[in-house]
Length: 260
Image (tube, rainbow, N blue to C red; front, top):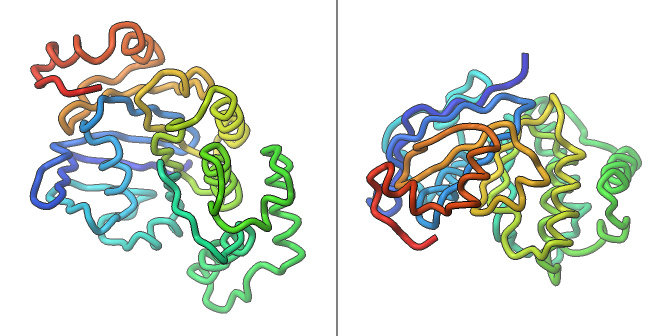
């Protein structure tokens, strides 16, 4: 049986301002879920709170991942447990190559599991990275570039997918990975994610728009408004949002309308 991420009545605030107001969501390893909602609804707050960002205060609720209370763990411990976050706005790290970053991340995880582990050898890591880059159709020269420095929007997002592929988490959260991408870059990034989908990877893709979902084809779609998941369904929910927008749902759930 695979890992399960259970979010139970999660309340989160930023600077004493409530953002999440009782989120409930369960994601199993091997499933693909989408979280949609207008600006200010709490989508990215959920992603950062799950990863343990210090600016986000968990006021109440539980997050159980693979049977472990995640709220008691630091961000790096959550990552080593098998949770991964692809950022909406990846940060550049001058002087650190993509390859060195990934090898350090792999070794940190191995050390946490066994303090005596000497780490992955350079030949083994090179083979691993080349295999992942070939799978995703990424030029091998990419590994020698400094992390996100001078990268286009599409390259930054492809690098996030390469990290996802190399670190092999149990659950991956994609925070608006489609943000800022043209249609060609979006197709390339989505194709990479699709190649990684399978029984060993659960995915939560956070997005405003249906276009990303047309490629990823999630089985479960959830709508968040005013800090709560107000509706859940299949792909037909994304179709409804695409056709009518969020305004009908504001009225339906008694939520004050905000800018989409």
